[in-house]
Length: 421
Ligand code: ATP
Ligand code: MG
Image 1 (cartoon, rainbow, N blue to C red):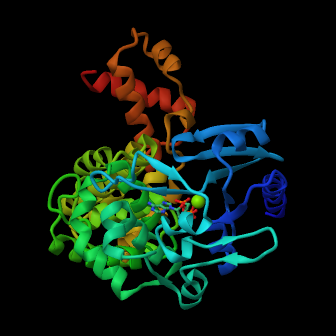
Image 2: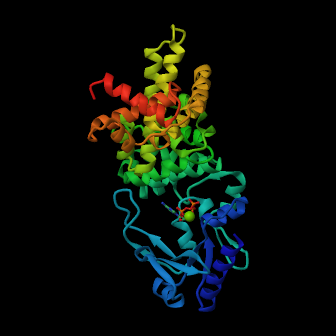
Image 3: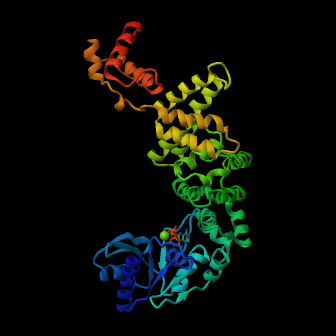
């Protein structure tokens, strides 16, 4: 936004006024040159962190050991980082130690890709020693310096390479791709949550299919061991099944589709998503969709379509699944079904219609409460109550009885008389 641009310009101007150098750098310049929305504006400066802190009283020392101070200005936060180089890469991870330097070109040299190694002054002039602007124009991802070395220094860059290539729909230069292939085994050294964060950006980005194809060709993931226990063959098959992934709007459904394509049960998916350190809400959302899938496929097996009374039985199974796992997950599964190649359209259209006709889908909408049942049946509350409530819910949801208090109480009495509750 222009508010953010103005505020960050003010930060740069203050640094210049105190005799330091300062530039916008990295993603914001890349996105600006591409005409894409800029979401945050990072600043690189010759000023040391303590100098930055002394100039801007309102700041947060977010990454002092890496020279980063977040300066608060007009309601925005800007990461202001001192020019630095890195060295002493250990275990293919980013280094613990950094060295502050005085030349902006040195700072640009430590950055991953040419398109991320451009900075821009307040005068609008670019500093672009590695030809990043031309690479943006040609739509290529190219490492700064020797690709193999840069990937060996920090293995996460290989996934960033795939993420930028797929997100921007760029290609990767020959040398950079060759370097990646040579270093791909080093990705094991990266913490799983950082790998997951990049995978999320690939899967949830604008060209997930392209990204997955690149992942497949890169050999970055099929290490055949936890938490990525697949062979290249599994992944190739999964890629075919998940070809429609880009049509799915929700992240949750994209992951559900992938796990479905990888032939994971709901239970297995739960274990994997945990191992990948997904937050619980995402994990549960995905797993519920896969549980609906299991209920649906089980019902299709029990009730072969075309058998006598088959359609009605399928409808009842489906409604039970909607009640068990929720409308959102059920809708999710139907959306996912439609994204699968050769989806059995007839039944999913019917299932959608059946769901639409459900008069209710949760206990809160039932016209009778647990208390009312306790009073009417004159029994002490116990497990029987939950069972009767669920049976009433199911009966109303499938349309066997209307959602009417008197009728429901009457039905409850009948159930109570008939069954060992
Ligand atoms: P976006 O924020 O849109 O993902 P970005 O380019 O801002 O893109 P960040 O991860 O925020 O990406 O990093 C900011 C800048 O820091 C990058 O543009 C790049 O210059 C540099 N950078 C980030 N990660 C690395 C890395 N692993 N190795 C080298 N340079 C990096
Ligand atoms: Mg950024």
